[in-house]
Image (spheres, rainbow, N blue to C red):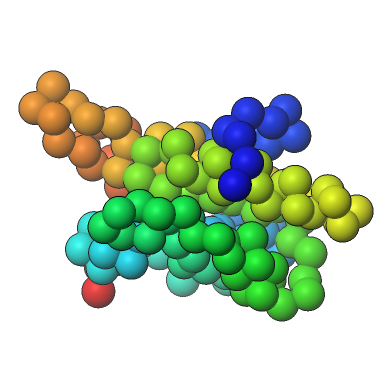
Length: 149
């Protein structure tokens, strides 16, 4: 599914990603976490920005088996559009980095120009001293909008 190192994939802190999404109405956010995470932990809320977000699993819960259709599903979600920037987010930034590299490689093979960006720290961020996520860093801890179903 790709390696997680590619110099063409940059990183942005959550607040920087938010600002860039806000400034660029063609930008897209792809949340690559699992359906369970979206339901029980929450999702970024971009409703005030006017840009789109797509929830596409990079790996399937509970075995975390890679989604063999991930890149294809992203392309389908883009519906032929070429966003100037595609941001990828997961729990803490690892899966989303791999996902961003995979999409960047696929776009490059097609000769499509779009910047793939990993959201560093992810949605929940790193573990704190008590081994809890969501309070130390990440989208939620940085006070960015999010919602739960």
